[in-house]
Length: 424
Image 1 (cartoon, rainbow, N blue to C red):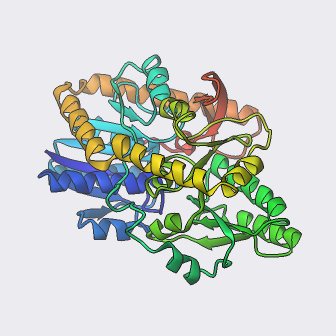
Image 2: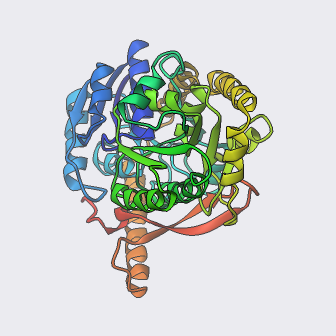
Image 3: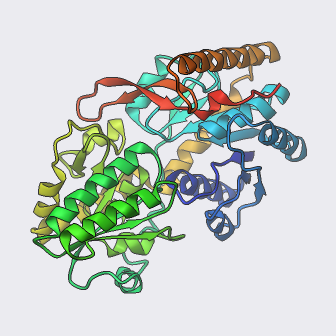
């Protein structure tokens, strides 16, 4: 197959890593894959994978006329069998460009915990959890598939890197227990969870030697660094270290005594045989283990709490029990290898590609009708937002699955796509 993969802006994040790893795996299997994405620091991953890269304009809003036009020109040049777009901004650009105008088959992937209503209704879609699969199939006429995040368990191996060398290089405190977060420092759910961890570690650090190490960058880095400085002053020592982005964070995972994570970072922590605590919204935290993993398999490595702090007790229980840490680490490594190994996920993606190509592309009139529906939703959302005197982009109503109860919570999610001038 010849595939044009449209990736998220090449920042250092889970979606970008998944995109590059799967595309590179398909190339090794004999497929022709070209990645198109806006430039960023994750280009180093693309270069290391020897994956052909075409830079896209770095658009502030989506769908973007320049990006849609560039993708349309690329499809004319490369003549792909399929366009695979990762995450909603790129899905909209690919829909308005090569799919709507040229009828090129399009597969959309959303690895977030919400599926926005602004995605085209009939375009085949992959989601990352069983709960989202069930919920989305009830509301979308187009095909919906499960594609769980892959983990390169050969590269993400505890013996592949030197965690202690990393600890020395970044100046971590000798003898202190290390709680490591590797995350893009953006999105309210991720940032609020890290803020909660900073507050908890500030309190624990006053009575025991430990450090929270935050690895990552993003628009909220300054806010988190200010919170860390307050925590360090409160504890009287450097209990929180924000070290910025690391192109290859494997040594950071290997340096951890406990990994605190969300989404695919949870799986990488487990691949490194480290006990892992998943965090989510409203102070949700849960240790991943044989007794708790079923809820994560269904709802994703995320959750919604009730505002109660459980993290302090969870951390102390793990840090006081080396045998339990080792047992959870060994179990997690086996679990990730069996279920989320890169080769197994690539097998699934190949099957989804075949099914997408076997499904006839809707006629131009149907594609135009879907475009008209998206425009109408955009206008309606803008009018609602204006009525509420909002100054930011309109909000799209989405469904978030409550990981602990299975209930669904309606919420408002900022969606800059609805403010764009839609391509004609």
